Image (cartoon, rainbow, N blue to C red; front, side):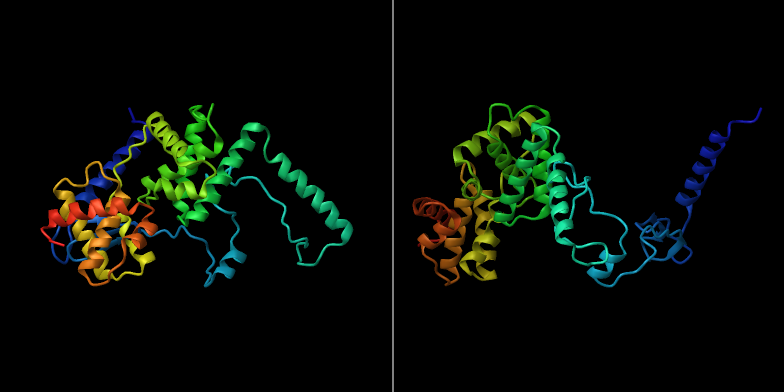
Length: 318
């Protein structure tokens, strides 16, 4: 009795995989053969390409600049979580020109204005979608003000959508939850921003942001590692116009003192600011405690206390 064709095909695939796994390199006799991203069999030891099965999955046309790429592309923008409809609905352009680039008549412009207005209205079918649209626009506004990359906005939008699906928004302000989602996204993406910086661009105060962040991170099970103070060093040093030498010294101070357990229970922004202050003194690029405190948005007392602890741990006498 003949076996089903699917079973025979599976056996052939298994035999082919076995042949590939036992193949050896004719140059160096190595059996360390891998399949790279371009679907080529390559020897990892000497780099010889044994088999080419490269399929070009890109477009059939070539473009050498952004304008050519835009004119030849036949697809729209990718799906994004930063828009309430994920960018799938159409929009009517504001240029008031036809397909050939000619200006529209005044009658046509009035008609397109009315159509555009109705198009904007029907993009949201109910109050829930309008609230989501407002929340995502708030996230985009605050992210632009903070200067964080696109990936942070995407993660913040996903966190807000999860909170909405879990019904965590009820009884809380949309601005508060969207701000907390952005703060969580910054931490997850390794681009931390302090609560003070977030509250400056938000319409809610620092206490509500912290309270809402703790609530949604607990309810959604967001695994947040403690913020590394070293991630604040490049930004603070750049704003203070300090050299690479000071940055390296500040990182060294943070690493050495953190190993001794001084970081436990301390604010990472204040800890980084004190390390930068100490490093600037050691590298003869002195900055006052007030200047460093203004950039890090901490008090001078915090910097003095952390500074004393750090220099004692380093064995440096001021």
